[in-house]
Amino acid sequence: MKYQGSCHCGAVAYEVEGDIQGVIMCNCSMCHRKGAPLWFVPRKNLRINRGEGALQDYLFNKHHIQHRFCPTCGIHTHGEATDPKGNLMAAINLRCLEGVDLEKLTITPYDGRSK
Image (cartoon, rainbow, N blue to C red):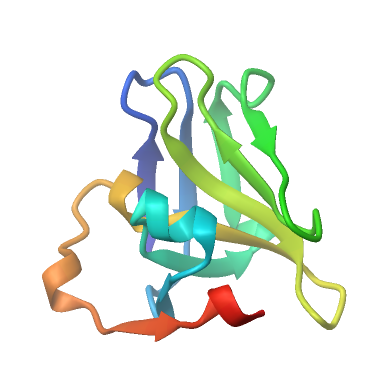
């Protein structure tokens, strides 16, 4: 399935393809504050349609994950990193996708605080 997503102001818009599975809610210092349920997909499944050049990155801790956000409205749309096997991945903020009912999804806690 293909989903449309954006930041709050619409300066960043994207589409992501796949079946929403394996959703996590991380408790690391960043994710806890964002409150974003994350869906991981291969980076090739994410296409930025508008605002890619405007996206800003925030790096912290081990600097492995690019936490990407809109500089205008501040909304975190997704993150980018490589998985342990070296594959490029994107962590999609499900709250930015149109038509996704979070109450119908199984969201698994992830203890990122201890990592």
